[in-house]
Length: 226
Image 1 (spheres, rainbow, N blue to C red):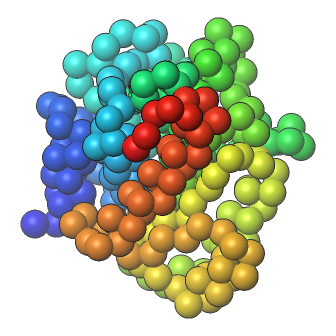
Image 2 (cartoon, rainbow, N blue to C red):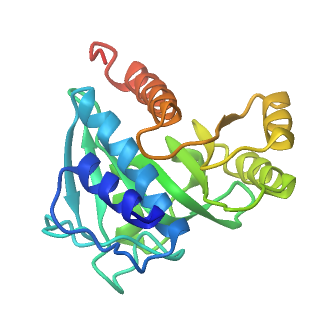
């Protein structure tokens, strides 16, 4: 089975949904982002959240259509799917793939996977503006490489983080790099290497995602325990 097929199968298992827009011809890097999206959704569901899938119009998605290139959250060029996560007593969250946010400098930044309050996402759709990075709950930078990860990727991530100033951010890859480990560890940034389907590292990533949800709930629904 090819790498893409393994990723697609794991996405379907994690989301427990029917059709997804990825197939054997999809780029591994695109499907990898969908895999990380799926791990976030599955983590929320495992810890008691209600998860639904909607398109740009707020209609329930019967098949899941994922972005394969950067775009605006409010774009209606295709009925792209996002997940809606609802924990008891807390404002709803949304999970998006490949959308832009506005940094503190006013510059737009692409987020491979973005978790943000549903209220902020609704404002983006209503006003046709990119959501504010500072209002985001989690941003995940996803890297799928068959070659070595260059240190420039970590430096770019550090620049992204500095301008967006979100609640939490993670750098996730299917492989590892000792230079990136040292660079991000020295700055106390979240880095999860070797994250692939059915790996211990995928479980480690889900543990980090759970921490993010716990932090969000401590602010908005402290009586909700996960």
